[in-house]
Structures are given as structure tokens and as C-alpha cells.
Picture: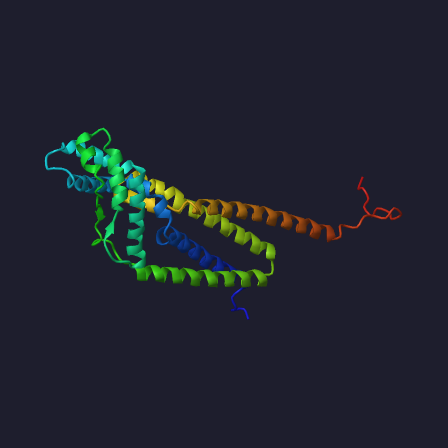
Length: 287
């Protein structure tokens, strides 16, 4: 039947579904799965909006441990800013980011707070050289720093739907790719198309999860925070390079096989017959 979909079209449809599934999986591995954002806690903390907000919260927490007016507000702000740079505070902030991600992506409820012991340790280390602060903070009283959880959205249902759609697209994409590859008449053509797809997906991954995040970070503000989140999963970059390298190698192999088959085909075609030695030349010069 002429109206039947060709295996090549089925392969192309499978590659399109696989592209969409891979992109959705990359977003899932970055924003939904816990881990990448935890490791990038310091980068998130260095963004101006986050840094300013956390500095004010830490300063407020420290102020509750000292008598009113006992410390210059400028000194208090400087100590709070140094507190954010301490490894203990970065570790506490990373755990808080896990709580935020759990609220947003998994529907967890409850207050979001930084580890009070780690925050107090970071504040004590940052207040070294400031006796008026070091003494109250050395008592060991934990410092409670919380994040506003009333503005944290709950998209757990949509996150589950996203993961489900990703797996369905990946399954049908793989089935269509396999069927199209097995049924297509020219396997080398199918290999070349799959390799070009791998190169395009790898390049798109680099653009979306490596180049774009750096552009967004340069813009600053909360857009810069979004750039840090988008580029948090460093594991996607090696995967992108593997796709590009594998696709390029596969295309080179396909071209070599195609060139070899072409030469073999041409060699099998009989060439023009040559004259026999005893046959006179039928052409005579007019002169």
C-alpha cells in the first residue's frame, strides 16, 4: 500500500520522541532529582539576591544572642556576610536546599530551617577577632535561620506527571527507532540518521545546560539563580560530549562503509569492450 508509513518515517518519528524524552530526562535529573542542587549550594549562595536575603537572616539570628545596641550594625552585617562563606554554613544551606526541593517536587510539608548547630559554628568562626560577638556566640546556643516556606510552590503532582511522560516517550521512541532501523532498506542510511541525531542532541544539551546557564548567571538577579539551577547537573556535559563524539565516529564509519560498497558496486559493472587484435578499424580518415 502506497499510503503505508515508510520505515524511514517511523525511524524519524522515533528519533523525535527520543529527543523529547532525553530533554525531559535531563530537566528531571537537574531539577527533580536531589543531588545536583545540593552540590551547587555555594554557587546558589553567591548569587546577589540569595546572598543579601541570607545575610539579613543570619544578622537577625545573631542579634538575638547579643544585647541590643552592643554591636555596631555594620560590624554585625560584616560578620553575617563572613558567616555565609564558612564551610559549615554552606553545608547547612545545602541541606536546606534539599528541603526546598522536597517541598517543591515531592510535596513535603513543614518548616524549612538551616541546621542550627552548623549555623552557630559558622557564626563563631566568622566572628573571630570580634570579642563583643565571639563571647555570646561561644556559649554554644544554636542559631535558628529559616527560609520562608509559604511562598514555596508544591508541584509534586506535575513532577510525577513529568516523570511518567518522560518514560512513556522514551519507551515508544526506542520501539519506533528499533522497528524503523530493522525494516529500513538501507541500514547505512539509518545509521547516518541516528548518528546525526546523536550529534544534534549532544549539541543541544551543551547549549541548554552549559552555555545558557552561564548567560543567565551573567544577567544576575533571580535570573542568575535560575541559571545556577539549570546548570547544576555537571554529569550532563560528559554525556553530551559522548553523544557528539559517538555520533561523529558513527557517521565517519557509515561514510567509509558506503564508499566501500560504492567501489565494490562499480567494480562489478562490466567496462566497455576493447577491440580484438585482428579486427580492422572501421573508421577511416577522410584525408
